[in-house]
Image 1: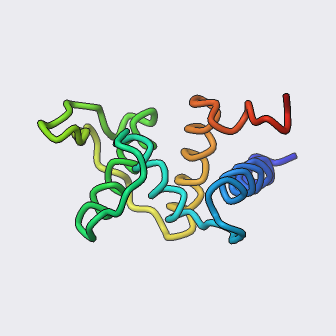
Image 2: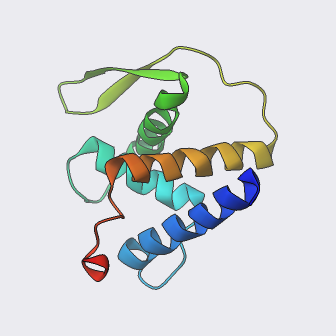
Length: 124
């Protein structure tokens, strides 16, 4: 199996599990999963977020997802509990498809490391 096929297979598995848990019957796309990761990383539980907070949640998730690749480093939590990251290296210019593949791989790695999807009751 090629690397691309392996990523596609793992992505579909992660997408299905996250969608089953949080999608309300709909299949979640990359952006929706990134948003959920931002909510998870904020650690304040799910609530109604303002538009600018939603953008910040997406940013938190992107930083967290790309941290293992050396692009960002966690810096501190502010007084409101929001994590802040420092940019270590600019992302190289990527085409839209390449960005999506990088994000999907990072999401797969995130859930592998967090083990958020591997220990479901269905599998016990």
